[in-house]
Amino acid sequence: MNATGGRKTSNNLQVTTTAHGSNLPEVNIALLGALGVGKSALTVKYITKRFISEYDPDLEDTYSKVEIFDQQEVIVRLMDTCDKEGKEPDRYLKWADAFLVVYSITSRPSFKHAQQYLDLVVQNQNQRHAGTGNSECPLILIGNKVDLERYRQVSKLEGASCAKKYQAIFFETTAAEDYQEVENIFHEVARHILREQDPSSALKPLYIGDDKVASTANRNSLPRNQRSPTSALPNQRSPTSTSPRITLMPKDRRPDEKNFVMVDRNPKFKLFNKGFKIFQS
Ligand SMILES: Nc1nc2c(ncn2[C@@H]2O[C@H](COP(=O)(O)OP(=O)(O)OP(=O)(O)O)[C@@H](O)[C@H]2O)c(=O)[nH]1
Image 1: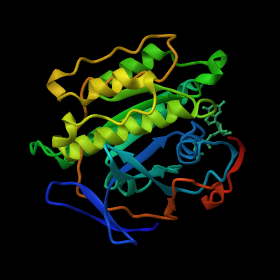
Image 2: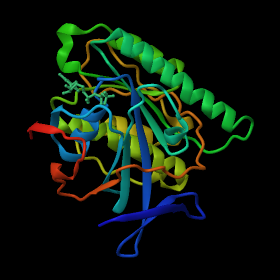
Image 3: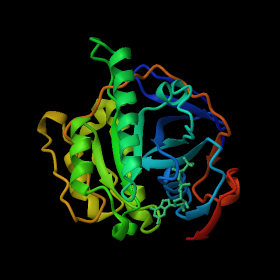
């Protein structure tokens, strides 16, 4: 299956017409964060269920995967950004339906960097939608590399309170271990986007792949004013999310896609062009 340019439907859903002529809703998720925090590792883990050890850090790519939510096929696109000089942020600010801002729990500088990205995204949102009350877009803060607990520099509590400050959802996770945890994060983000694009879907039953997150997913399937935020507990293993409120973001964008890759349900790592070395399935 291949994807061509997407467009908006009357109910504000972003759709892509496939080579077979069917319209699939799509969600665009940009991963932002300092160098080496694990953006590529999380992307590849989600797409291929594998963990990478080496890659070319200079390349920026967009990857896609077809998922099924509520018996509906949806294209989930990930932009694994490479933002060494912080130039031209519009390429992801205009493109994304949600932003995953990643830091490494083993690196305090990366946590500071994450806050700069959160500032950037929120400022952009405020500029674009000052007073319009326009569509909403999730902002997610991820503390990655929790498998390296012994090297931890940023406490879970710090991560959670930072997320609260920016009204972001918060997770701690690792790209190096359980695939299900990473998949749950991306699924929850994708569902958030779909609900924001089509609020009528908010009351539909959720497709839950793992009992561990059922309570979180169900909580977030409620209308916003009926949700009760969950506090992230220090020392509690991921994934934990706090979802006090979703941040408003613009929707008027199309991707400037470089190296677009459509990955099917049985993705093979040869589809990647970043030179990943994959050693764990
Ligand atoms: N132990 C551990 N290592 C990780 C994890 N995530 C990524 N890494 C490693 O950290 C290094 C950097 O990971 P990347 O995914 O390439 O980081 P990135 O954020 O994409 O970096 P840039 O592309 O340079 O911006 C690699 O050696 C990964 O194997 C994790 O959760 N745990």
